[in-house]
Length: 255
Image (cartoon, rainbow, N blue to C red):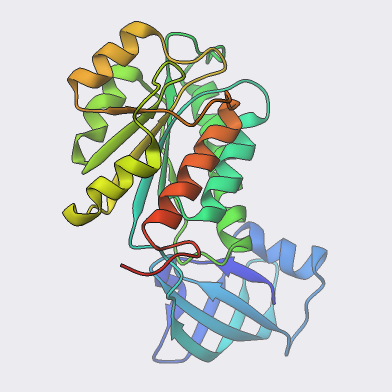
């Protein structure tokens, strides 16, 4: 069943109908070629899900009859924020898509010392983030998330450190770290009931020594991902998977 995100203000529980507006109208009528009586699945972005039957299609909106309402139980209790150094090309799009499928809650693009990507101006930055947010929404639809994770505006490494202070644990992948493994670190923290975790991933050239030094002064924990060097678009996915598994959200036992 096709799935769409809508605003809570477009849900009329009294009259038991839902209005779909914007770009989804054309997608439903022209691309998917759905018609009256067809069923669609909609989510309000606040962990409520509805099954709706199409009762009216116009150029401006599509009106649905509410057939069923249910609470979504797919969102993880583990709030992962990914601090991703901005990579070149389409790598960022891949990172957003796959980590959101896994359950990451926030993605914060970070400009680091060795970042290759540079934005021309604020308009260029906003245009890029707008595209990334649309990819996030599509990934949330595909994986049947109850919310659309937020793609933040790119910030500097120092501003990202300040942003991360609200996390209970911050870990930073560093190829020169040899002893502190991610699995052991997570297991040590289990008794502290952590659920807000920041993951820091460097650019193609890795974090600089100065950035690592600054990170450790702010209580970020450098971790090794093993004897092999992972690409920037692989590392965040690997770390997120390990954390989700170890804390019982992805194929493990619930805590």
